[in-house]
Image (cartoon, rainbow, N blue to C red):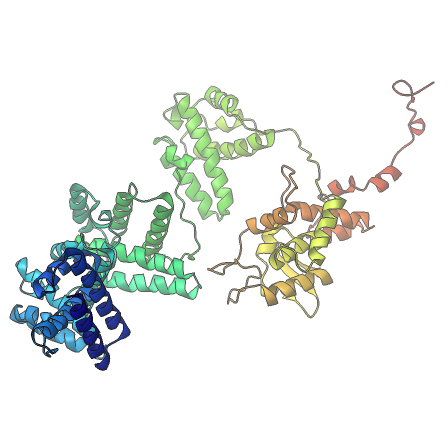
Length: 639
C-alpha cells in the first residue's frame, strides 16, 4: 500500500508542476501527502477517499481555510489515480455549489464581487469567492435574504462564527468579511460603519460599543433632541481633517494610527447605537470605558475626544495642548459666594488683566470665601470685622510676603463688595492688614567649577548635551536672557549681519537689542543648521518630536540639569545663568549702568544686589573703626 501511495503522490506532484501551480500550492500538496501517509501507516489502513476526508476533518482545526481547500484537491487527485488510473479535470467547485444555494439578490452580489476582484490572481479570486458565498449563505440561514436587512446584530453573529477556529482560520474569515463589507459599502449598499466593524471587533473587547447602561443611553438620546448635534457624515469629515492635521505636523506612525483607531471606535459606537455626535455623547462613552482601560489608554482616548469637541465648537487650539482635569479650589467654594466672586473676576477680565493675575485673584478670593464659610458666615451682608480678623489669624502662609500678596487682593475684593452695597460695613477692608517685613534674598550664582564645566561642554564636539541645550545655556550664561525670552526667541529676532538679538522681554514688555557673542552666534547657527527640525514655525527652539512647535520653559531648566546633573541648590533654576552673567560683568569692571542695559533693566535698583558678590571691591569700601570713633575692644582683641 505504501509504495502505491508514494507513487501516486509523486504522480500528482508532477501533474501540478506541469500545470505551473505556485510554490505555495506545491508545498501544501507535499504536506498533505506526508501527513496522510503517516496517518495510514499508523492506523494500518489502505487509502480510501472516505478515510482520507475523515482524517482531514479531524485536523481541520489546525489548518487554514486555504490549506483545507488544497488538501481536498490533493486527496481528490490521489483518488483519481487509485480508481481511474488518471487525474480527471473539472473537479468539484465548492464556491459554485454554495453560490447556487444563494437567493437571487445574494447571487447577484456574489457575481459582482467576482467582477470587483478581477485583476487578482485566479486562486485569490476563487478563495474570496468561496468564502464570501459561505458568508452570504450563513446570512440566509439567519433569515436575512437582502443586503438591506443586514444589521450589526447579524454581523456580530457572523463575526463569532470562527471564534473556535485557529488563529489563522479566524484571520482569513475576518479578512473575507472585511472585504465583503468594503465591497458592499463602495456599492452604497451598507453604511460606512460596516467597513469599520471587523477591525473594531478584532480587538475582542465588546465594551467599546455596549458599555453604556441602557438608562443612560435613553437619556442621552432624549438630550440630543435639545442639543446641538452633528450627523455622522459630517463627523467623518471632521475626523479626517483631524487626522490630516496630525499628518501635517509629522506625528509618528504610532500616533497617527492611534488617532485613527480611537476616532473609528467612537464612530462605530455611535453608528451601532444609532447616535449622532454631540460632546455629551463623547463624555458618556469615555466614562463608560474608564473602568475597562488603563490610565494611559484613557488619556489617549480623552485627548482625541477633546480635540474632536474643540473642532466641533469651532475652536482651533494647537494639537500639543494638554487636556488636564483637576478639581480647583473654585469648584469647592461655597455656593452663596459664587455670584459675587464671579462678577468680580469677570470685571478683572474686562479690565484686561493677564491670566496669571486673574488666577491669583481667584485663588485669594477662594481662600477667603472658604475661610469665612468655615467660621459660619453665610452671607457677605452679615460679615463682621472680627470675622475678617479671625480669618486672617487662621489663614497660614509659608512666608509673610505670600500672606501679604493674598491679603492685598482680598482687601480689593472687600472694597468691591463695599462699593456694590454687598457688605453691612463698607469699610471692612480696613480690618485686614496688608503689610509684611522687607525680604532680602541671597544672590545665588554658578561656582567657578560649574562655569568651567559648562565651558568644556560648549567646546566638546561629542558631548551628550544636544546642540539645542548648548545654545540655550549660552544665551543664559553669556547674554543673560531669561528662560521665557530664550524659548520665545524667533528666527526674525536674530540679526546675523549686525551680530545682535532683538527681543521684547516678556516680563517687562521692554524691547532691547543685545550684541551677540561669537560663541553664542556659532551655537545658534549649528543648532539651526544641523539639529533643528524642518518646520515653518518661526520659533528658534523646537521640540525634538512631532509636533515641531516651540519648546516650553522647562526645556531651559532641563538643559541645565543635563549639563550639571550633580547640582542641587534649592530655589536656583535656569535664572542662575542670568545672575552669573550679571555678576561676571561687574567683576570685569563693567559700570552698573551698562550692566543694567545688558540685563534689560530700566534702573539700577536690581543691579545693586549683585554688587555684594564682588568681594575684592567690597574690601575697598571698608571703613576704619578708629576713624569712626569705635573702640576695638573685647572679643578677639588683645589689649
